[in-house]
Image (cartoon, rainbow, N blue to C red; front, side):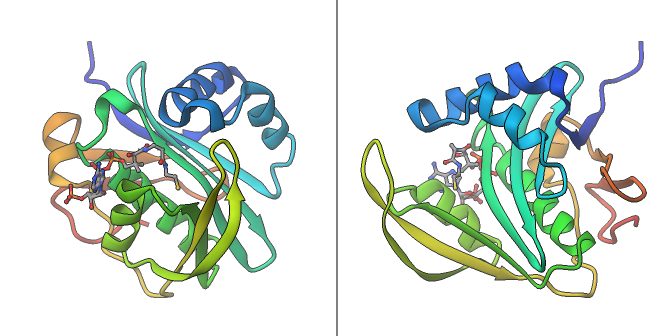
Length: 193
Ligand SMILES: CC(C)(COP(=O)(O)OP(=O)(O)OC[C@H]1O[C@@H](n2cnc3c(N)ncnc32)[C@H](O)[C@@H]1OP(=O)(O)O)[C@@H](O)C(=O)NCCC(=O)NCCS
């Protein structure tokens, strides 16, 4: 039997229940429901949702909104039992690659001001704080930190983080919704576009 692959691919209708389950485990009461995910899938021009899987295991997901020149990272989640092993970092790198493929200049996002894990992840990958949105979040009521990251036109050195390569696979196949697929490896510093 062949080895499972680490794959990034668009979320399809058949994936919705397990993606919603992952999201619920990661976000609790403020998770996107299956209904919300289905509604997002109905607007494919704006809403872009991907998952990362290894064989039958769903590892992470992200959802973005693409409006004109802007890409907004609406959500990103790693399966809780697999957190702190580099998957958040790898998933965020794929979002940066998506931004580059869509030729946007800036990637924006908001997060709860208390979300230290996500804040550290974004800072590690070049995001800067732009401001604060008062009472952006409910249950519990909380301010949002606005963050942005400039997207360079020239290639970023996209690779699979070493700890992901060691635990899962040194190669990631990226099956983009638009345009040709690509493969990243742990060793190769240049993206195979
Ligand atoms: C935020 C999240 C995506 C990070 O995923 P992850 O796989 O655990 O993160 P990684 O292992 O790739 O960590 C990458 C970096 O993020 C930061 N980080 C991740 N978890 C952290 C934690 N618990 N505390 C502090 N920093 C943390 C660190 O800078 C880390 O780098 P390091 O390991 O070199 O210190 C994950 O915690 C998650 O899904 N949380 C629930 C959903 C959520 O809050 N999403 C973001 C909403 S905007």
